[in-house]
Image 1 (cartoon, helix red, strand yellow):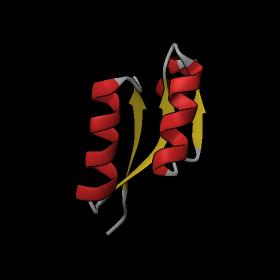
Image 2 (cartoon, rainbow, N blue to C red):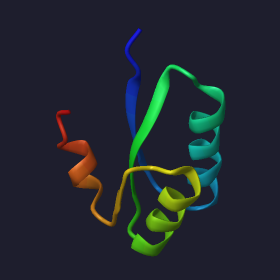
Image 3 (cartoon, one colour):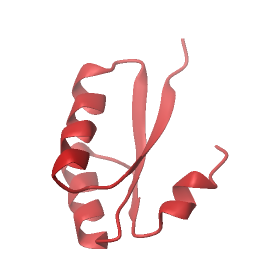
Image 4 (spheres, rainbow, N blue to C red):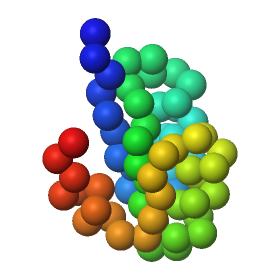
Amino acid sequence: MSQLKIGLLGAGRIGMVHAGTIVYRVPSAQLVAVADVNEAAAKACAEKYRIPQAGGDPLKIINDSS
C-alpha cells in the first residue's frame, strides 16, 4: 500500500497537534511539508517531526502535484 502524502498548513498550537497525530498515529500517511506565515514555526515543526520541507508560503504546498 502506498502512503498518503500530506502537507500541513499552519504550525501553531493546533498545527503541532495535527502534525503529531499524523506522524505517530496514521501509519498510512507521510507528512511531507509544513507551511506557516511564521516561517520559524514551520521550521520548528519540521525539525520536531522530521518533515522534509518547511516554509512560509502555503501556495508551494497547495500547488505541489507530487
